[in-house]
Length: 107
Length: 124
Image 1 (cartoon, helix red, strand yellow):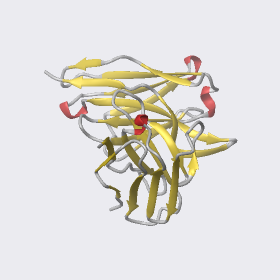
Image 2 (cartoon, rainbow over the protein chains, first blue to last red):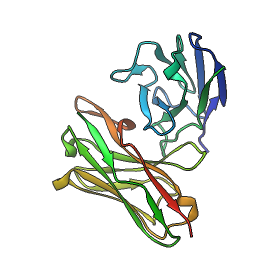
Image 3 (tube, helix red, strand yellow):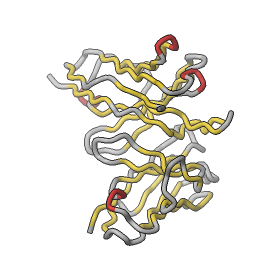
Image 4 (cartoon, each protein chain N blue to C red):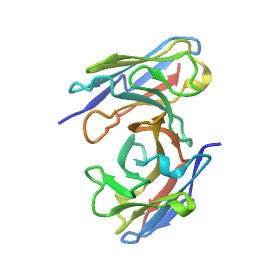
């Protein structure tokens, strides 16, 4: 069974700090991975697609890396508006699963 | 601007049916496929499936076959999610979301424009 595992489940950081979120696939998904930001009461927002391509309008402090089974979303310097839940999603295997999410909270 | 506007919250009894609408504007509706995503209370995002708007052909993820139907009406640039025989576990926020596209290439299942979500509560 294919799974996407995000870690950590919760990340507590302060504004200005660097955030590193991980997404691990149980099988090789090449670079077929996206990252979304989701805030309560709002629609999810596409940040990164194909592992490292920033979506339209996404600030440069968001970057994605990785290929195969290990992927990382990095936020270089946290802004107060960045505290949210982050999901990875793959489209290499059917069905296109989401990870379980990482909650980024203010320390 | 490009947007997807969803219908309002629904409160339904178990066994009833519900239809959620998702109206597109700001782009050519038939050029992009649409996905449906569910978020149950306290849970993460779950991809339900998608519909090719051009052909009206739907595809469903495991767990969303039978009671869930995707459809679309190009004359009003609107997609629909119809759920029959509602159960308590169907209580969730349902999102429609457009497939990411660059030029003529479709990044199927990646989603760049999302509706605001429709809350469905199933309770007796």
